[in-house]
Length: 309
Image 1 (cartoon, rainbow, N blue to C red):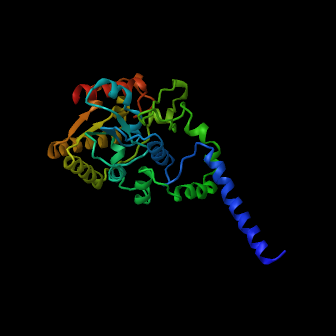
Image 2 (cartoon, helix red, strand yellow):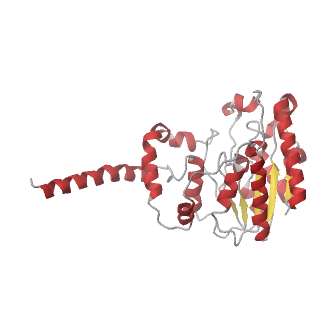
Image 3 (tube, rainbow, N blue to C red):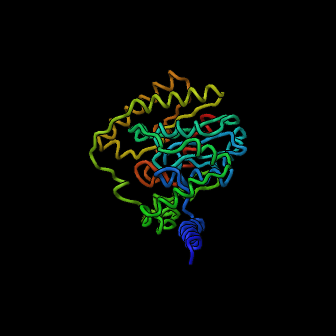
């Protein structure tokens, strides 16, 4: 066998070795990868595959506080001003990452940005380590090769996670659930037997701090909204009252965070709704200390409709 044939064989072998796992991965629910967050990447894939921003005039964005504690369908049905909801939220999305994502999408036809928050969203300044130009191109339906290669590369370090992907991320009885509804939100509504007692009780004593740069980014988000004549609605989502009553560390940082939002909203002239105070929800509306069930999410959404729309 001459050298040319050997080269062809080696090239064909390399192509097969690379192509086979790519084809296999394409048959799974595992999203194309841009970052180290499976939830964030799943949302980017959902946005593109479902043309989520097409015809949208109202964005919901944030961490799991926005992902699970808002019922987008209820908002769409409850006001003629809301033409279509696009929930761009993902688990753990900090305020600075919210600003980063807002800068990557087209806002020309957006009239409202709803940003549900909790104090934990202002604990840490960070942005996603992503190629922002690639994300923009991807969301504009351009073909980008690197997310496919990123998913392949991540296979080695995430093999265990990927093998149980459907059970972990598409199981509606788990907190890690990312089975988005048509608006991009998540309906967490499992029964009490699946509630994690540690998440529910949260008796851990921990000194929390708030990161000033996160509040600066919130003000920048408002500046962007103002420049495009978009109404920004910032929300404090409900929190389990027994924890705030029993855990002084949590109650201290919660109150400080609320005071900060009240001050900034008055200064910057955006809408601020303290749903924890307005709704005063009992434990029947929660699945853990800060995530509501469907009944809780609808209650929050009804109050948004009543207060704003």
